[in-house]
Length: 402
Image (cartoon, rainbow, N blue to C red; front, side, top):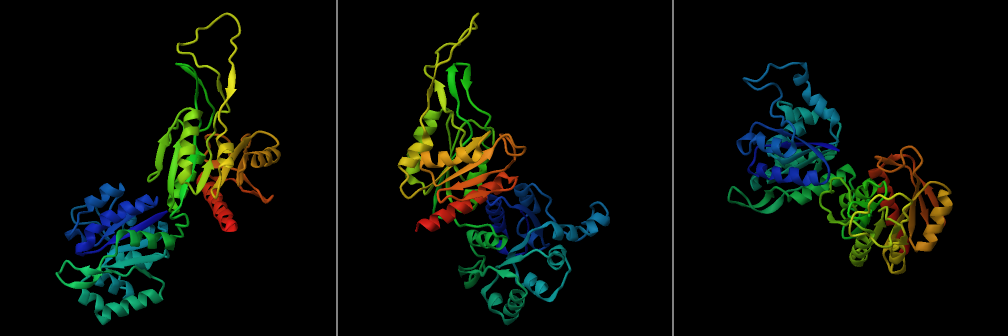
């Protein structure tokens, strides 16, 4: 999601840099807009480096820059139409007055009038300015129009006075943004254990058995759970995917490693989601040296690997346990059988022969199979959206078990 962050001229402007980083942790795309006064406290280059985007500082081209054209002259309209939220932090008494009375004399105040997106303001100013009837009347007007106000904290102010007016904590502002955008924190306080990717079973030093799993579904689950406030432990087989920011990532290779790690970390988990495509078999004995080509057939003896999902099911306790079933035929029958045998609360099954539902795709088409007999089919959607549907169902299971 895209937000515009308006930075106005106050000592607290430097805190906006920290706020950018915090918003990026929520996977928000941040476009910074600075007033002229803000640039007296922090440079546009700071925000450009943090966001990787142009920082907008003027309604029209600055002196010495390329001449204004149609594109630059209506840039505020383009920004207004593409953002999902406008945040102003810090918001000075001056900008609050402009917003309240419809004064559009710079890019930020013009953007405010042009956007239909929700608006969040985090005021910061001297305590007397905050308490002034004009400021409070402006805030009353803005609240009445639906603007979300993050009230300032009380404490020692830069001017040397003590009282209300200090910019609210970064975390408080970020939480308000997430709330307004509908980004949920409904897994806060919970630990979610996710397994992802394939496992590899060595035949000899240069060959191994594996499968086509990319890890995309498991990584999407880890990212979604983290966004929703969970402490996430991601146990991953070999994958080239970028590690989701903020998760506790544990790389493993063989099924035995994943088995050992998952059982150990499951002790702390409220939810365990086993999305990894674990090898069901491994060579009975791996060779220490490369196997040379011969003239006849080569027979490879295989033995079963540990059944991680079944072991978790036997030791489930109050933990919600979710398994996956990648099938090519009799999907419902196989998923129901797995649900019963493994002791899971839910099996997420898909037909990997369907277009858009197989390995290494960005989308998935799944059905959720529950212990109460329900089958909940999901349409084709991104794996992140599938992850959120799974997490929604996990919360429902937890609610029903109370």
